[in-house]
Image 1: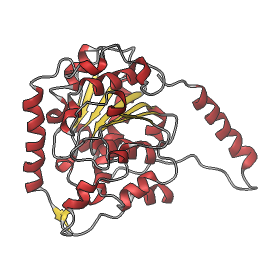
Image 2: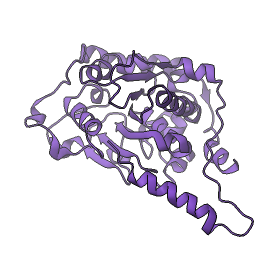
Image 3: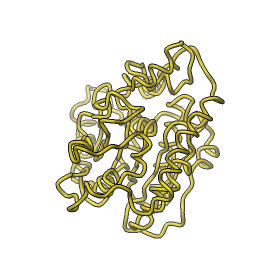
Length: 322
């Protein structure tokens, strides 16, 4: 788990800077979180947690991908697997099946991390899939309070710098807000990646596949400052599609390694025979549920609200203006 020394040093530097480095009559202010635009009751209702029974381990927040609910994405794989491994895992369900403004969905993740910290008194680990990785990263980038209490940030099949699939969906200039924001070159991913791509004292692990059918080019998932693990670099013949990362054994073992150790995942710590194991433990009907993930995406897309342009990037502006 994350060491505290750098956080202590940063706090001391901030205090000294406010006295020594400030111009006469000027005080340096610590970063202020953006205000939530979603009612707190709504944010709270989106979080689903078990009875906490592992007080010595950080709780894990699971953030789903586009077109899903939290349970559709995680209830058949990481929820039971994490419980068996000795972790309390909470699931957040994002609004509009994650087809709406990613910035609004990011508020749900930021609130959930804060709430888990209040409930347990511990730092929080987050695991996200697909678009859910953008909300993870946005919560850390734009909420200083979340950055301070996030330990591990584990990203599965994330469109970190935008994906050509979303670009294709929006080729007719009419698509859901989230598709605009996930496209390569979008204003949102540009703002998300501006400056430090992995800000704060957070251990970031990005796990991705060369043959991902929805996130391409695959290298879009790689982030400066993260432990970037291309699955085919570990197991050259491994075939892991986008939904397959939700039940792939190698992906799971890397995620679990990050949770169990200080720092991000390290492929050198993988147990012997990792390339020979296909399905993660405790996954329920993986092929059926995998197909369900794609079906959910198509069904919810048909009901999504379509817009003719990308929403304005407001989170970065709100942070500057406070």
